[in-house]
Image (tube, rainbow, N blue to C red; front, side, top):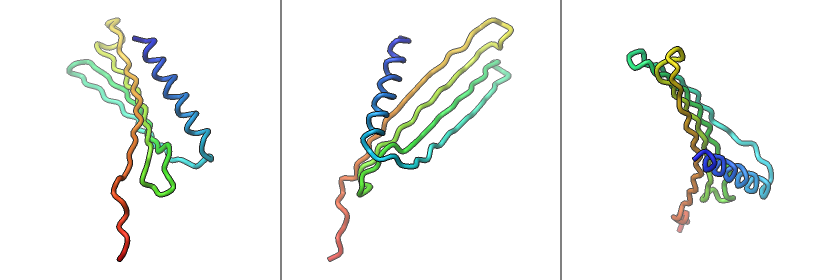
Length: 106
């Protein structure tokens, strides 16, 4: 399972490099979200980091490619009890195309 995660991450990085190298470099906005949550009742803590960016857009802005990556780490039972936590990685590529032709004035 761990090998599959690394393979998917490697595939994401390589495809991003290929897409980025085929077009001229542009300034991009990357949205970063960091959150932390703790529940005293269940003695559970969760830390999350997410990055979202527009990767590519066609000249007429009808086709767009966006990407996001997130990391969530959850610990249960506190550090003194010896229980570990789990970490979840996720990456997404979103392709959007507007099929409607632009209305031309008559």
